[in-house]
Amino acid sequence: MRTHIHRSSTIYLIGILFSFLFFTSCETEFLPENINSESEIVVEGYIELGENALPPYVILTRSRPFFNTIDSNQLNDIFVRGAEVTVSNNGQSVKLTQFCLNDLPEMVRKQVADQLGLDPDSLSTNICAYLDVQNKIIPKEGQSYILSVKVGSYSVYAITTIPQHIPLDSLWWKEAPGKPSDTLLQLMTRLNDPAGMKNFYRYFCSINGGEFNTSFNSVNDDALIDGKKFEFRLIKPNERGEGFDQNTFGLFKIGDSVAIKWSAIDETHFNFWNTLEFNKGNQGPFSTYTTINSNIIGGLGNWGGYNSKIYRLKVKR
Image (cartoon, rainbow, N blue to C red):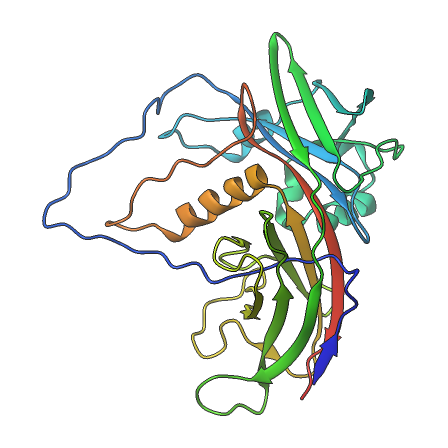
C-alpha cells in the first residue's frame, strides 16, 4: 500500500553507504596521537524544529585518556556541573538551566530518561543537562544558533544552522527480498532532491510507540542524487537489546505501527555523525583509525540543528 505525503513535509533521507576494507600482508601498530592528553570538554547538544521536539539542550562531559578504564563511581564525575551555557541567535542570548536526574522525582527521572533515549539502568548515574526550560529559544528554518559554554577558565563555542526541509514524495510497503514472508515487509520511499544545493539528512524510527532509534548508517548527503528523483529502502533499526538476525534485519513486522522521523541537518552536523558511524562500523583487526569530526571550538563533540517531521504508518500489504 502506498502512502503519499504532502510536499510541505520535512524530509530525511537514508542512503546505503558502502565501506571498503583494504587488507595488506603485514600490519604495523598505530596509536592515535595524544592518547594521554589533558581532559577536554565534550559537548552533546541539539536544537530542533519539528513535531514533539525537545527544548534545546546540552549535555557536558569530560574526556578520558584513551587507555583508561572507568567504573560506576568515576562515571558521575565525568558530567560537568555548574557551567554557564548560553545559546545566541540574532543578538538574543538565552542562558540554559542546569537539571540533574537526582534533583527530580523518580517518576519524572524515568520520563526524562525515556525522552532522551537513555537506558533505565543509567539512572543510577546522576546525568546532568542544560535546557531552555522557559522555551525562550524559538527554532526557525534558515537561522543559525551559537552555543557558548564556560567552565571555570575554559570556554568552548559552536554554531549550527537549521536548514531548509525537503519533502518526501511517498512511502510504501514492498515484499521482503528473497524467500516470501507472511510476516515481514520492507519500507520504500521516494525523494525529489532539489538541484544546485547541498542537502544532508538523518533519520530515526520508532516501533509501536517506542523510543526513536537510528540504523547503523543514519545519515547521507545528496552528492550522488543532486536534482534527481531517488527511490530507496529505509532500514528498520534494531531495538535496544535486539540481536542481529540476517533473516529479519531491516524488515518491518506486519501489524506494527511505525513512526519515521526525517531530519534535515547542516554539513558540520552531518560530518560528525558520518565519521562517528563509519568508525563504529569499521572495527576489527583490519580496521582503519577514524577521527571523529567535531564542530566544537575549544572542545570535542557536536552542537547540531534538526529540521524534523514525523511520519506515521501501519505495516500492512
